[in-house]
Amino acid sequence: DLWTARGHVRFDDVRFGYDRDRVILPDFSLDIPTGQTIALVGTTGAGKSTLAKLVSRFYDPTQGSVTLDGVDLRRMHPKDLRRAIVMVTQEAYLFSGTVADNIALGKPDATLDEIQDAARAVGAHAFISALPDGYATDVNKRGGRVSAGQRQLISFARAFLADPAVLILDEATASLDIPSERQIQDALQTLLADRTALIIAHRLSTVAIADRVLVMEHGQIIEDDAPEVL
Ligand code: ATP
Ligand code: MG
Image (cartoon, rainbow, N blue to C red; front, top):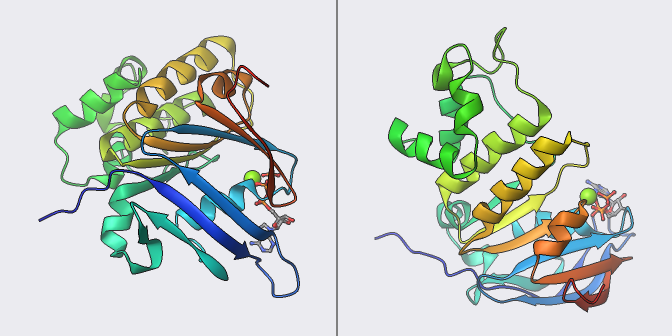
């Protein structure tokens, strides 16, 4: 049977540094209840992406623990972890292959119907359908070129289809035109429903839809409030 995560994430007294002589997170604790959306903001080098990498297990803490539903990530089966926690990065990386393959990355057995439903949910179906070969368009071929905003939507469709309990999003800094900015925002709202999310936020509009905003500096949280307060 498949284990299904609820999505309760906790950092307990986490200490972490990439190099032995330079600590990035001296003593970090944070409780993210199931279903909560957190927007993480703060100066460059504060440790925001480092937190994201610890939740996705690119790295493990030197001391302390990161847990999902009370289970230390180090004790979880990698397959369960990959299903439960999905990270969408700034680059919104597309690999060579069709648009459909790119959306199905986290669920290779997905049917075309499921792929299209995911694309519809995040508002990507219209532009994909307008590509030369629709969902069969090779993203690296002529005519298959997609814009930054469209790449982001494809990666949202991928995450929506994978349907993880926890979503980690390192938001793109690249500026988008106004219509796609709106589209991304709508897609994000859909994507966030019914899951826990940790978003490294670069847009004010993202901060506004979060349940809680954390301001980070030098590996520590210096503010923790509802968005209305900030
Ligand atoms: P930004 O807003 O610029 O993305 P950030 O808050 O995401 O910043 P991090 O990427 O977490 O910051 O980096 C925190 C610190 O860790 C920085 O001093 C950075 O130079 C350092 N760092 C990040 N990645 C590595 C790495 N792979 N090896 C060594 N040091 C790293
Ligand atoms: Mg970063």
